[in-house]
Each structure stands twice: as C-alpha cells, then as structure tokens.
Length: 581
Image (cartoon, rainbow, N blue to C red; front, side, top):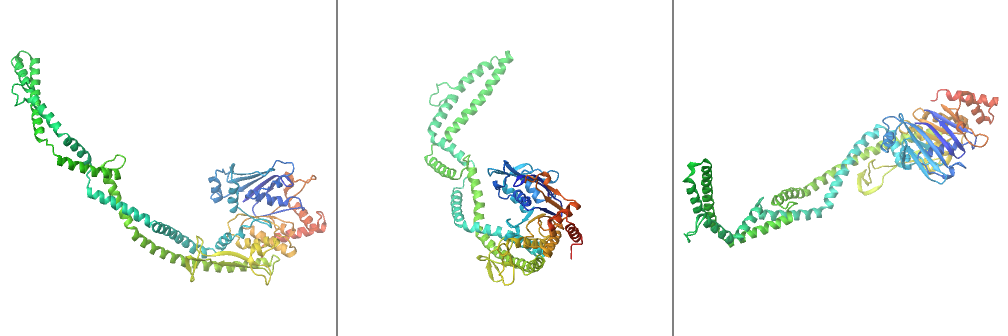
C-alpha cells in the first residue's frame, strides 16, 4: 500500500506531505486548492506523462516521492530488486522528477531506472480511476483476467490444464515445424553423409596406416641406394669375398684382441680392455650379419611401390575431406562413427514427423475441449458479474444502466475447432472478453470506455471494483471525481461502496461531497496559504473536531454554522453505523 507521498513544486503545491493509511482516505479542500495535484502526483509515480507545465512557476523542477509498504513475497518487490533497487525495512521508495525544460527522471529504491519500470510496477500496485486516466479495467486483457479471478476455481482449474496443454502443443508444433521446413536441408545433409561414409567404408582405413605406408614408400623408392650402402657397410665390417686382400674391421679387431690376449694376465686394467674388445667383436658380428640379411631382403619392387603410392593417395583424399586438426586417420574413423549416428537420426526423422503429427492432433483436440470448458465457466461467471455490477449501479444514481460481458471468438482456419468453428487460440483460451455498458433503456451495449460519460465512468469502475473486491490483487485504488454529477442518496451509496471496497484494499478518494468523505477512515484536507500555494503543513490529517468543521464547510459553505455542524455530525454517525445493509 501507499504509505506516504511528498510533493514539491508541482502546480500550486510548494511542499506538501500526504500521509495515507490503510482503509478509506478522503482528500477534500476548496476548489483550486490543489486536490487534483494529488492525483497528478500519483500518476507521475506510476510513470505518467511528464508535463513541464506542471512545474510550479519559478521552480527548476517538480519532485514527487512515494513510500510503498510491500509484503516480503511481493512480485513488485522482486521486480524492483531485480532492477537494482534496495528495500528500506520492507518499504520501497519511489520518486519522479520533472524539470521545467521537460526532462524527466525516475528512481526506485535509490536506483535510477527507466520511466517504463514505474509503469510496470504501477500495474500491480495502484489502480487510478478518473475522467482523464487510462483505466486498467478498460483494457480487454485486464477485463478477462479480472473475470477469471472473479470466477475462481471454476475457471482457474480448467485454465491451468489448458495452459499446460497449450505449452505442450507449442513445443510439439515448433519441433514439427522445424523438422518439416528443414526437410530439404536434412535430405541434403543425409546424402552428403552417405557419400562420405561409403567413401570411407570402401577404403577401410586403419589408424596409423598412413604413417606406415609413408615409411614403406620411402624405403622402396630408395631400394638401390639402400642395398648398395648395406653391402658396402657389410664388406667394411666382415670383408669382401671379391677382394680377399682388403682389410676389414673384423680382421683388424681380431688382431687387436690377439695382441691384448697375449699379455692380459700381466695387468687387470688391460684385461678389462681386452674383454671390451671381445664384446665389440660380438656386436660387430651381429651388425654384419644383419646388414647381410637386410641387403638380401631388400628388393626394388616397382609394383609394390606403385601399390603403396596408390593407397597413400586414397588415404590422403580421406584426410583432406574428413581429417581434423591433427590430420590423422583416427580422426577420419571418428568422423565416420559420428556421421553414422547422425545419419541414423536423420533417417529416423520421417518416422518422428509422423509421431509428432499424431501427437499434435491429439493435443489440439484436448486443447479444444479444455477451451470449451474454460469458455463455459467464463460465461457463467460473466452472468453473475453483470447482475452484481448492474445492481451496484442502480444504487449509484444509474438505475437503468445494464452491464454485460461480450465473450467472442475470432475465426482462424489455422486455429482449433471449438463448437464446430475453427477459432484463434492463445495462452488464455479462445475468448475475446470485453465489458459492455448500456447506460439507459434502448441504448445499445458498448464498451464501457465508450458507453459511459466522464462522470458515469468512475461510478461504473467503482461498481466493477466493488464486485471484484478480493479477486483483483491490486492493493491500492485512487478515485478522482467518482461522485461527479451526483448527490443526495446516490452520494451516500457511493461513500458506502467505497468503504466496502476499503475492507479489502487501500482506497484514496478525491471528493467534493461530504456524503462520501464522511465514510472515510482518514480525512485529509488541502489548504492554501494566503499567497496561493500549498505548503508542507497545507495537507493535514483532520481530527474529529476538525472533520466536523470540514464537513460543515462542504455542506453549508460555513465551517461554524450550527445547522451545518449538526448535519455533519449526523452524517458521520450514519457513516459509522454498520456499513452492510
């Protein structure tokens, strides 16, 4: 609820504090005293248009500050904190400045925010009703939501199931649309995968095969040079049969061993060297034998070399197409495995499309049944609502006014079939909901924004809010000119119904009728100083005696008139009697 509002340099207001309270607060004062500025100030706090003409003459800017008490679990508090605001002991401080040049700034919880955030928060905080205000309940979406809350479980339960089915249908339809619209792309992808997999399967690559073939190609390509080198090396180590006189490493090593063996028993150190020569002799013999075997095995095979090069060309093509960053056959094999899994998925899409199509048909049929159930519950609640609001209007000097609900559907060939018609649908069902008003017999029902005059509109909205009391979660209502054009008994009934609404919400009313003000739990009066401005002390909370004087002024134009005071006291006594007839 709105706990307090401070207004500075706005219109005739110099500096004033409006102290509000739970229940019903009435704001009164002489014509031109600045009562309307209370409504204007609240409009600014709710993100209303900033008019630089509202800035008091001589001031650089106008400032409106409000303190809102919010429950800890309030979605408004959560949204404000999300925007960076800080709560002050459970309260949210909101302010708006308007410069004389037309610049506007908004602050929530000490943080500068876009003005649009004030509008967003205000939607769930305060409902303003006045001849020039944009009414919350004038919007069809709000009217549908309010009707659903008024209907209670009869709509809430099927609507919850409808929304769950609607969500499931949206998901299935989105997946189905993606699969069907991408059919050509999927077919092209599948063809490319099949070509690649066939190409890899035909080659049958083995991880590391390319490395082994590269080594074999290198060896076969230089077979003559390798054979000549091995033969020469063998001759140098073991001797050349074609030249028995030539010295070789084996002969020289044997001579060295014999020379040392002859004297090794004279010195252990020399004996150790002789042993090492023996080891070299064994190693030399092994290497010589391996060289001979290598030379015998090595064969310059042009046919094998050609086969190796052909195989390498095939593998190189696979590496170029399907290799990864390291360009290995292991990556080619991994691509084939992933491609096989993806191809199986693509080949299964046709079957999946059929399954999703059947599922979509079932969900649409289920959604249509639930939509019809929601519509029937809304129709029943709308009848009760219309009767209740029409009865309220009869007591508010509109005895012949009749309120009805227009619940319609929009034809849509792509929609769902409800009651034999294909109609558009959304997350809230298939109904277009609007409140209609016929202000007098013979008048055609029209949307309430068009069917009521300025003075009637606030009374219609009051009647609607009273009927919706407890169903609409907005905690604060502000009515301006709700009593325009009425008086006498109708004014008393307006006051009585405002008091009834205040049992479930905070209600602030700017009024000029004492019959309305008498029902208030708190009475504020706006007073001008001699220089024509409203100062900080100019918006005051009246005690019982001051309240009698103010009501007397409103009744008779004279604060101290005995008859006026008596009438005021009688009015207060009647208002304080039990409020429910």
